[in-house]
Length: 249
Ligand SMILES: C[S@@+](CC[C@H](N)C(=O)[O-])C[C@H]1O[C@@H](n2cnc3c(N)ncnc32)[C@H](O)[C@@H]1O
Image (cartoon, rainbow, N blue to C red; front, side, top):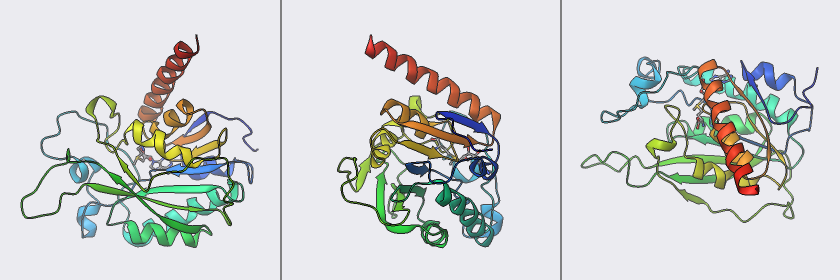
């Protein structure tokens, strides 16, 4: 059965969810999948997300999340699987944005193209000087948005001019997931979608993409494996909806 619903969050495996979506029904794929990063060797990559990604001084505790311990070969195969299914559900010309860190950049651009998308470039998320400094090393200040489209992307789409670098710090009060993205960042990024379109995030986490989409006037569809995160998504979406209603009244 196909999902014609909009603004729907599915709890479970994204592959099952994507299979329920209608072909050529979605206007943008914007997602922050598990990177399976955090080390040069299999043993370090297979550690828990909190061991790999939480810096020493970070005080707020976040729940562990799943799907972040694949080795390179299985990560590539899995990315191609879900990206191929996402390719099917996107409309021709729809944009795709995938977050990645520096380690997984080559794998992610390979997966995007193997799934059939046209790779168009890389935008930078500059996390600002708030990230931990290390003497004698470059600050690990950037993550990347690998972007492309399903087939040709017309120049007259109803979308704004977007920057190539997004400068947004991670703020404690705005972070609801161990690797949560800033809401302000996602509010900028979702504008790649044609106005009024439907944005898909198969790895919703704490729902930052969905909240950003709703706040910017888009419809959205999402999936997230963990119940704990789904609850946070619903709470955040409710807060965003009431802020919207307060503004409208
Ligand atoms: C990097 S996080 C996304 C964080 C999100 N951008 C935010 O700001 O909160 C990736 C999420 O994907 C979820 N996940 C992992 N494998 C999944 C799968 N097969 N299907 C659906 N969700 C999955 C994890 O539980 C995790 O919450």
